[in-house]
Length: 545
Image (cartoon, rainbow, N blue to C red; front, side, top):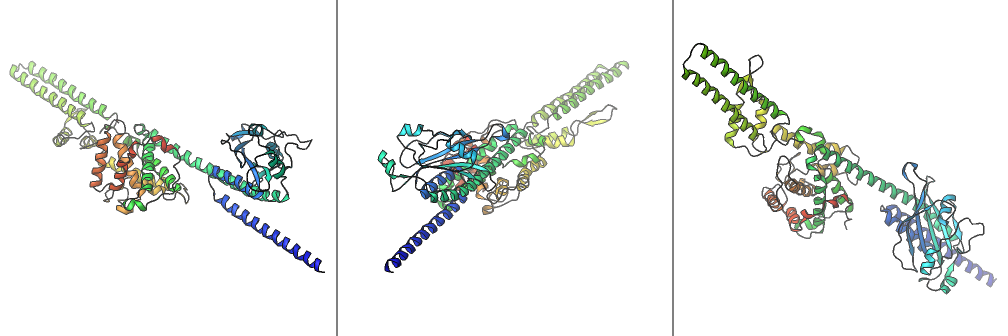
């Protein structure tokens, strides 16, 4: 009776230990599932899968393959080797390569059949096995791939995602160094290992599928943004590269803010998503220009293309009309025998009319340039607007139309007040257009950030006239980048490029007028953010800590 009781107690202890082990395994699998579902970076996710698989099975090494499907069925799907791990052999990271999904290789046959493969001795597979083991790694490193468990990773939609290959389940800790180690410590993968890998593979397949979907979405976002930037620049080729440079400067300044430990900026930190949101917003800050008339957007001079030619034709008609009138009246004077003095007076009168026309035309040409117009010339333009010439039926026609007078009277630049308002409307258009795009919770502030890059601290900016802290710090940084690039960009038809020292002086002046934030401008200047290579704007931003 005593022995029987002892046996039962021992059996109970074994069952309790087995239950505790199973509970621990279940907790591990649940923890692994949570960790895998939270990882969005595909490379990091694959590394985690391999690490967890080795940990729960005791495998010494592992490799992971992901199914690669060419677009539009141009070629058959293949397995792409992504990464491997080996606790006994140190080696440089293996380059990626592809393996056909066929019965020729171990991983390929598992992918093709979708059936797991458990090889107690991979060097001696079953005689009817159609595959062969690639021993090149073992021969190169002295490693021995003995036991092997190869498992297909299939999604919940029954789609093959990849293949997980585990090598050398071992007992004891530490690496496998000698042939004796491989003989003594390497064990076949047992049923428990298969059960654990089966559960892990199901979780891994879903996590990989989600991560790949996330990457596809990121590429789609990036493609949309790049296409939008291209569309903007096609409408205004003179600003080619502006959006990329502004994004580059803005993200670089944000990194300096993130690392700053002075003043109020010491409390400002950006996450990886914040950097990506900022990059997209900066690239799309001028997206609203698609809602501005192209003739206004490209207006290099005060008159629209073709208008000056019409004005030149009117002045030419006026000149010819004056000469024709001279000949007609001179003939009348000669026919009635008028005195020579009367004829000369007529000639002087006509010469003066032509001189006024020529002088007026020179002023029109000069006023058409987007330079500063002297105050006295403004009045002269109005006077020219009152001059007329004979039309086809002899009726008086104005040399300058009312809208032409308005354009030529612009004191600085090339745009009338109405056209300036139309250009400024691009900020509101940016918000309206970008708000129609489902950016999701990660980038929900993007339209507001992008549309606020013309706001000023004193409230005189647009489109909303925001003040101080009501302006997002991202928009404040973007405003600095936008102004600096607009000043220093290569010569444009309506302005000359400003040298960097002068552009930085202008930024400081803008802080004195409370248009720009002085602390942000200080970082921009001190860390020479303006020297950042524009190519960095086309790369994903570095994750922030």
